[in-house]
Image 1: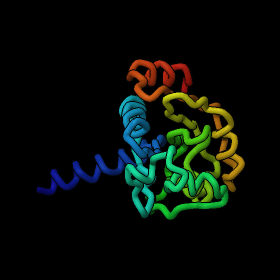
Image 2: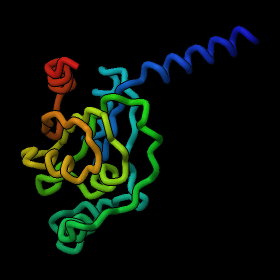
Image 3: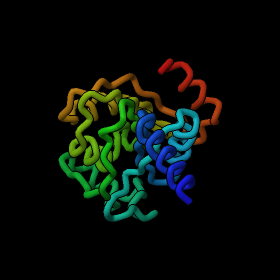
Length: 176
């Protein structure tokens, strides 16, 4: 019993000491989540989801409906939806930040995260998913919204159904 407890403590401690990379993502339909999981697995990173306090329904995501939630949020650039708490990221050096592109920008929930999380001293690597929109200046806008001295690397946009190989090739090109 003592050996089992000691082994568990050693494993827990080593995980905490060496977990220097995290993946933090928001995904409305599962596309960004899938890419985030590939990154987390390849990089042996911890993974955290940005979860809006009020989940998005299919109707909320219908950008063709002018009255939908995503359109209402898009039309109010200062709007910041409440999100569920994410554990402290203090122990991480590198954070992959993932999000879908909505009108070539990160959704407002991602701004809520960036504006309310101390990212000081961290390297932020943005990645986005979209069927058609380019990455545009979404990463630069998030960097500007951040109140910290983090280092932001150039981001990438993956197509809606990016292959695992596409994601892994990108990761290997980063040389981190």
